[in-house]
Image (cartoon, rainbow over all chains, first blue to last red; front, side, top):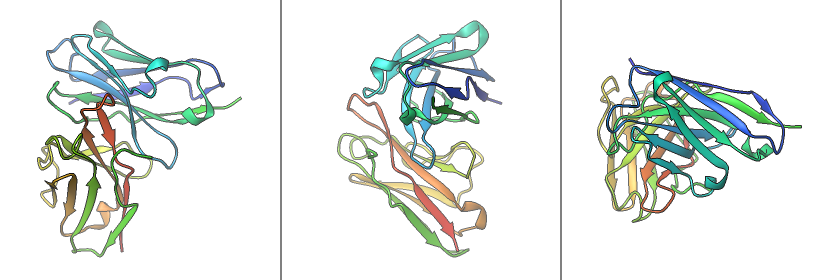
Length: 121
Length: 111
């Protein structure tokens, strides 16, 4: 059974850097084709894809946020870390990490429970 | 503004069928068979319901089906049940640098 869980601060101040960790089980990021992505959802709004990292360390970012995002993996710890710099109140959202089966799988399944991050001074 | 267009809301009575549309362009929905659909209940994480336009993951009811015509994908739910009341999001691969786009979401109300 594959599970993922997001962790990190619930409150950050404007201009600060957000660091979120996705800890997963039931699969390995050293397995060929596997990936982990990050998606966020502002309160009452739609989903927005942020970033994706694959087993071979190939990284993809949303162009609109690319300058602010960094995604890394620690295969030994079964973790993926997302950092987002220069946080703004508009970045207030629930942040999800999710499993991608293979490079050819254009879907996420399953998702973590999500973590709500509020940006406020 | 989301890259894929969905109706804000749809409704139906128990036992009826409903269809949710998801309109994109030839760079995403119309160009690839890589449309997926997610169900999201309030306060919960999205759940994959359909992938690659019309495939159902193991464990998803066969009351859920997907299709595509041109630049528009559709999710059909037959035999509506109260538990189907949720938000539904479509997603597609895109050849643009965005790589992956979601729709704005559709709230399904079971009357």
